[in-house]
Image (cartoon, rainbow, N blue to C red):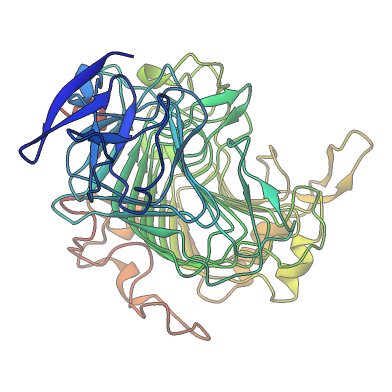
Length: 507
């Protein structure tokens, strides 16, 4: 291979062209082969240092490239990615025992041609600690004005905490498994991080989520994360018990917050906002929650608790119609095989999930709540108080609740026929809407305007949301605030580090 001279700290070094090259202070004694990734000093030895050097990167990424374009590049040892702009090329793994630290203010662009993704394997750590003024950004490698959902893969964190299927194969990572018995496992830090235009379909109808959290343990720090224009779910948890605060799901394709396989963590302060022209063929929801795909009584159950979430649905667009001829993807349709569908509910809880949600607000969704009984006994869990939905305020829905997937009428489902179609009793209201109306603190408003929200969906000083919260029987992890929804009047937690127009941002 051709070699190229570069300067590093005043010392001339030689680097193999067209590959990722790293100084690895943990592993400086091995003799490198021509296809391996090392930095050479002038005396022919390995240069030990605490940062990374990249060569032959693509022009729009500032000359720096991570990965070799295939699905096999693996970080080893401890590495530090200095502040700068980089191109993520192919599937890049942080292996068992490895740790990658990304400095605040760094921008990493996912390459579309190689379906770039960053996958943290069990025992690996991603230390992405941004700041309010210098967030870390993972975004599309496409030029401004041409970015689409699914331009690259996304971020996958895999840990050693429990799930209800033991060891599981991750969605979107053919070599990577997750799960174990260490609920205190630490997969690193994601703080003040943006993830934009992720979700490339690596197979038909199989997209990577914006952020996947698979059996991630409580030792991991997740806060101040914004996922925008994901081609699948914005966030999906598969088991684990990681706690999260300050999450934003912005104009995703499928569900905003998807919980599966025994996720038992806690989440407080979250905002989801939908694009009225983007919904998935499976029906898009704010929450989608399963215990397991077959609805079995597998333990640990999905028992996560969410508090202070604001769901802004598609009906905030006055022109919205819940029809395929309206929901076209608009300017954001990637034309990559991802199928469009309809919007469904703020909360779809099914398949034996015992998801809990309190002190939260949902406005402008076709349906408020679906407690789906097709598989498992979700309604039984609700009736027995195992599943808690308290202090929820809904506004501007077509139906407060329905009882089945793809059913938009507030009627009671009494069973399913041989074709798995719901059997309904139109003389009675759905179990879901009846249950909603009986729970402590729940309220429904025909119009969201009566809640007195400003243009950023924050309550104004006269909003009834401000004094309506209750944290009865909640543990001390939760911040005991007085308000329902994600915001207090004049709240600033979404200021400075967020971006609600990533399409037109110069990176």
